[in-house]
Length: 177
Picture 1: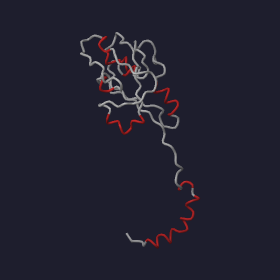
Picture 2 (picture 1 turned 30 degrees about the vertical axis):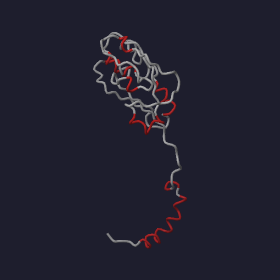
Picture 3 (picture 1 turned 90 degrees about the horizontal axis):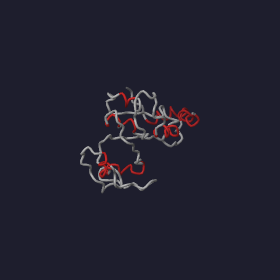
Picture 4 (picture 1 turned 45 degrees about the horizontal axis):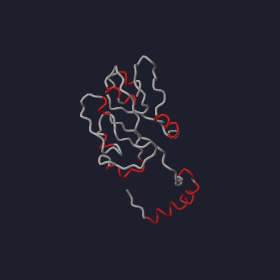
């Protein structure tokens, strides 16, 4: 390949370079704010509350005796927006702390008829109990992720994407999630 001197290149491209500012497609794009996104993370039956949830560092660790009363929390965070004080488990999130919101208190009673693990993701963003698959194809109506996706997902290829790490072997979950 033949080497071209810098000056020769600039001299040859000079006329074309004058036209560049008027060629909108080649101009610098106007500064835009990034599209908003939301990510929901759900850890089904996988954290010790006192090490994970802000304000619950003094909560009891369940002994897993099988009693449902054992999982009742004695420490309650006040309703509303509270300052986020990261727990030791959350310290790696320090860099993005200003972009994180913890939504807690979404709870519902265990429903008989299926294993508790099969109910995990099915009520994650609605707090609605999974009853049976015979009621309706869409028994939970709107979930929090879809409500927010209507507001911030307008300019994205997909308003919302759902992923689950559960196996969906119990069909009761697959229609809810």
